[in-house]
Every structure is written in structure tokens, then in C-alpha cells.
Length: 479
Image (cartoon, rainbow, N blue to C red; front, side, top):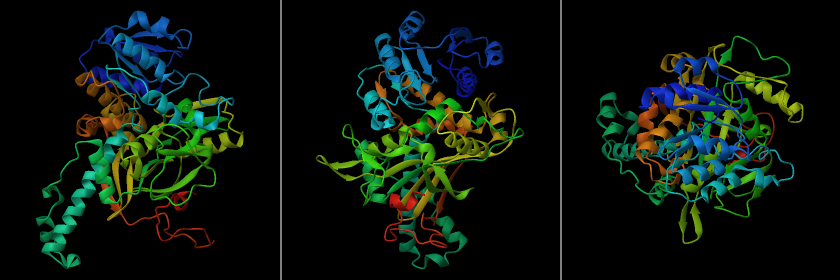
């Protein structure tokens, strides 16, 4: 295991619980001496070392052999370099995001588009190999791609139920409770897509225009954020890195105009655009069942690109359908204050960082996918996991962490069960198998339809340039 921050510490007990391996056969490699109590408790080996471009082969090659598993939960260590080595040695691999070497996110000598997740993904997807390497399989990216597939099936079932209701009971609003029970969604036959093209066709036929990774974290600490401190419920280094990258989103075929700072890539799959500004300075409107409407940060994430790419339908070389996809993240309140301070210092990180865990007193991480524009308007499907539930389910995890670590575990198990699939992303995996593994650790898994649109309550005090003929234009969602 590379890296032993909050996610590494939370993943270890899950590995020991679900995978038949002796602790004596696990080696943790980390540049920092974090989680030493946990390492001693479980009896795993610890190697205090930071991997660099110069030493990673020297460090890893002697201790990895065919059939081993490399769990990469580090930052600033090149995904592509590690995957290449694992392919050479026939070692299985999983990570939670695609990473460059140190400075790859913030090197001012690189053009903005080359500091994007789009560019990192293109490099990784061009790699070859036969040993399974699962890319970007935490909560998001990762778990959310499987939630999208299940959400599409749920919407399909609900639309089928509505069609049946209209046939049996034309006056739908007058249905009795007994009549509603007679046409339960679970009884509706749903034909499940088997291929990438079939999944894209289903999304298109349902009319899905926009997919938000809609997340609201309400976890609270007993220790308030201090001035000069960056507080988060997961890796500060990871969040700061992606927050300083350009805002990125999958770009849908229904969109009518490019954002003012929007740019298109001149290489690759063409599924996404980027904004010439950091994600930590870009806000969007979104919705979750518990929070309702909120402003989230459009932080770049791999899933915005991979989901939009996977659900693309083409006729020849022409794209005829693609959804707009992006993250809409409202972190915990202490983290929001940290971001404001961070931005005010012109993206200079505070001298002190703190990851919340034992000091969390209450709160829930509500993480799901919001599919919009279809016949039933909007549908959110995802996990509502409280801090109390997370602590009961697995040690060394908070609510945010467990949503990630359970997905890392699921990616490992899938790779062990499918060891010769080569280099894969979440969308190419069996969503039912992944959800089966993750579900016990996700708290309350909920699906809820909503009438919300990003036009709701707008122009109350000020006129805006809105496209009211289609509420799902990105210009209506961008704050």
C-alpha cells in the first residue's frame, strides 16, 4: 500500500476483513509516519520512504512479485509510472485517482489544458497491458459511476410504471394507495444494457441531459477551524491539488453556448471542456434530498470526463448524444472557510492542516448522482452516511472516508476476481458486483425524484441572462 493518510488508514481494516491475507504479507510505504498506532495494532510492515521519479523502481521492484497487489493511495506519485511497472511484473493495481509526479498539477510551465484531469486520463487510457489495473476507483471517481448505471435503471423502471399507470388508470392523480401498490416499480421488467453503446442509448432515450456528482458534507468538529489552518474530512493535499486545477466538465450535446472562460481540448476523446479558472473558484447550483438547493464547487474530477465519454452515442464519427457531467461539491463548513482563506491568499496553502476524524461530533456525507432533464425531471441516487454509522461500521473512518475506502476495497475484489482485464475504469466494470460489496458501508442508500431545476427562485431580486426554454443549460447552473 502506497500512502497511509486518512484513506489508507481506513482501507487497511477493510482489506484484512474481506480479503484472505495475513497482515505479515502487507507492506505500507509512506513518506510520513502517520497511523503508526494502527500499523502496530494490525501488525503490518511499514517502510518510511517517499517515492520519486528517481527511486520508485528501486524501491518497489524487489518487494513486488507476480500475483501481488499494489494499492496506491498516495499523492504526487505518477499513476502511469506505477501501472507500467505493475504490468511488467504482472501485479494487480488499484488507485483512487489518476496522479502525476510532484508538480504536475501546479507546474506553471505547463499549459492549462496539460494540467487537467482530461490530459492525465488520456495518458493513462493510452497505456497497454493485460494484468488488471483499476484506475480512479474511490467514491468519486469510482463508486459514483456505478450509481449512475443503477440510477438509469431506476428511472427506466419509474417511467415504465408511469406508462402502465396511464394505461390502467387514466386519472393518475386519483389513484388509491392500493392501486399504487398494485403497480410497484419492483414488478416492472427492466432490460439492462450489456454494452457501452446500450448504456449510452438508454441515457439518451430517457432524455438525461445533465449528471451532477452532487455531494453535501455536514460533518462538524468540536474544534473550530483556526486562522491559518486548512481543515477537511479527507486528504487536504489531494483536495488542494485538484482545487487548483482548472474546472472541468463533460460537455453535453444539448449545450448551446460555450462558457465565457470555456476551452476545448485539441486532443483525445473530446468528451470534456475546461474553464480557464481553478475549480476552487468555480461554483454551480445543485440539489440533494437532505440539503435541497445549494451552491457547490465545480472541482475537476476524473468521473466528469469518463462518465461523459462512456455515455456518448455516435453515428460514425459524429457525436449525436452526450450528457454534461460535473462535480458539485459542498464540503464541510470548516473546509468551506478554509477554501475562502486559501483563495484569499492567492492559492497559498495555510501553514497548518488538519483532517477531521475523532473530533467530529455529528453530521452526514450525502454523496450521490443527480440525473436531470428526463421525463421525471430530476433524480438523485446515492449514499447518506452519518459519522455515527461510519464509526460503527469500520474503525479509522469518518463518513467521507468510508464512502471512499469501501469503493477501494470493491475495486480490489473485482480485480482479484477479474485479473486479466487490463487497464479499466469504473464504467467498464460490473456495477452490480461493486454495489454489492459497497452497500453495507454506505449507510442509507436513497433514490428520490425532484421538481427542482436551476431556475427555481431566480430573478427574485436581479435580472439574469437565463435560457428558460431549457433549464439544463450549463449557463443556468453556473453561479
